[in-house]
Image 1 (spheres, rainbow, N blue to C red):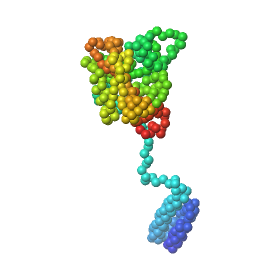
Image 2 (image 1 turned 45 degrees about the vertical axis):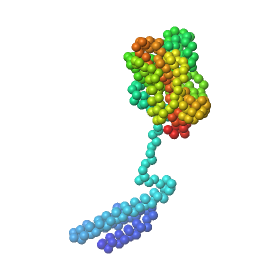
Image 3 (image 1 turned 60 degrees about the horizontal axis):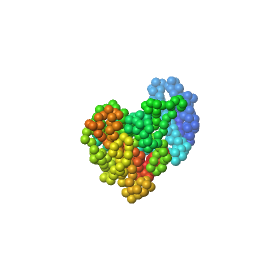
Image 4 (image 1 turned 120 degrees about the vertical axis):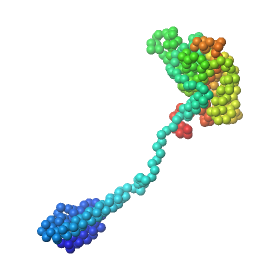
Length: 352
């Protein structure tokens, strides 16, 4: 019987080496380790032997069984690996030890980046941030800013008026006549109504103008207005604040100039121009070949605006300004056309 086991082991190893696929391996497995295999017959015949011989042959047969199981496992793994490599093309091979690719999580829009930087600079200068509704009423957008119903200056702001629920009704109350705000100055009025002076705030937000678009104008803009109300405030204070803001924002000294202008809610009023950074003041399409880019309107708060919010203009005075963050972004990133910010072109946006 010992001879039979050794002969069986040699035959099993020979058959295992000849196996080419998993199906043939299963056939060999049943031949040597199945219920009707020769090894099973040897184990059944042990009961007919004497105890000493039964113990000896049992150890030999079980040792052969364990060896055979191990050989079958090794051969199965080898065939599975060979089969996988055969079925997998070289270009589809995946090395699981390689580091994973970095997942793209997107990034902020350039206008958002500019707004956050501007807010951070003004915050470091002591300005708080105030917010207000984009759908505004006539009173806050015009009336409280020294522009009554028949004021010709209203034509300076091309307004998107919202129709009343009943088109035939005539709205007499300016607080019920709704519009898309043309500037964020209404936020200043709302803030002063609920806060006592001194006041130092900025009001960033989207504004709407019913006007034609070109390289420097859009019908939807992000504006940042500022307001400082205190005692003994002058134009010199305003100029110092704006020059410091531009210096920090562009990280270099920037030339600015104040041009006399007119706004009904400030007196005196002026436009603030900055030397065009696109062309270095030489003149280009972005600045209208003037060498200067108009960046904001500003002025000293009109006494009538202070009266509208119950501030005493004999005691309090201040300055207000409003800048377009779109133009600020144009100067910072040297973008020649303001319309590029809202085209949704990923080739443009992915640069930031």
